[in-house]
Length: 452
Image (cartoon, rainbow, N blue to C red; front, side):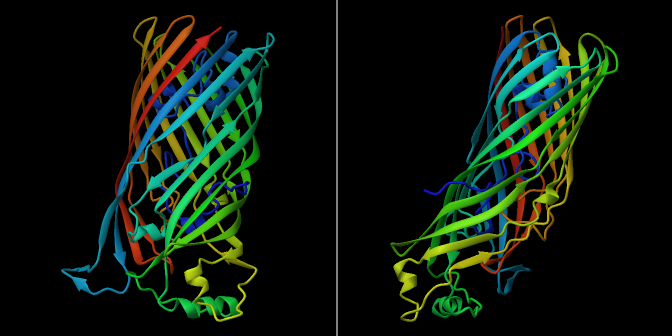
């Protein structure tokens, strides 16, 4: 199997997974405490997960600490798809299809290790998921021409160096080794004039397809993985014992993909090599923390993500071998082109994610945490597809923490309400447009930290 997958590489033809977490396909669930505080977790005392939220704050680790995290995310959503070229019935087109994203939960792991290596220097290394998605839609449905199932598993390793410059300033810099594995399935509706379409393709004279939505389909599968490099930098400033501020920049990551492509129809198989590129966006997070007293503090956080870098997702296919049933439609001696490029415009907008979190100590060993977050939509109707069928997002969260000198355990739960989005059909989709609605995500997280 060929490697080097691009993060959403195949989605130009296979657009459709339900996003796991934040707007776009970003993930912010990096610890149970972070889930509980809505992602506003940049200034925690002695928390190894600061490596993910604010690397400059790992200087708050006294000696060394190891933390493991497991987060369960369950996305739900419904859609209404309106077919092309239909008559009306009672004010609505005939043949409207209603369905839902089958519950396809995902586990997000995390691990952090931080060690103080001198009086004013720290080193940390961890694994964190920054991008991911998962979905499954009914086979042979209208939207399965966008996607019948999709899974993107992403993981980053983040070795980090932090230094305390004085009593007020701390800084950090780190690398990011980003891995992505992708599996995508979709159905292609065969045109009624398939023979003419294939002949035109071979001759370099495209012929417009004419679809029979009840006719046979071709199942397409794309699979691959990829590694790419990025970096991050952070700074933290402590005004006094009650107030501090931090900033974290995470670079864009450029992926390229070579991936296996498989076709199946009427019991016959074909293959192709796929290639594409995509840029995962850079982001800037700014946070502020205020302690009202020794028991209660509040944290504000704003993260600006440059989703406009995700402007296109074009795919090129080469070495195409058609399934026998399709190859038999070609005129004798016909040769397919060396490659076919399928363009896909995205044109997403840059956007903010804003969060507020509260941490309150009930006693020396127990704390209560709560949070609220708002994600503004970055996907316009023009660039929308079933890959990320979402609008604005609002998240409510709650959690608790037990802590002593050696051990910290936290539990959290969150409910994310996802907005609606209209998705236009392409020339290869049987629907004119679809409406994503009644979407929400349930999130549960647990973390355990041991202080050495």
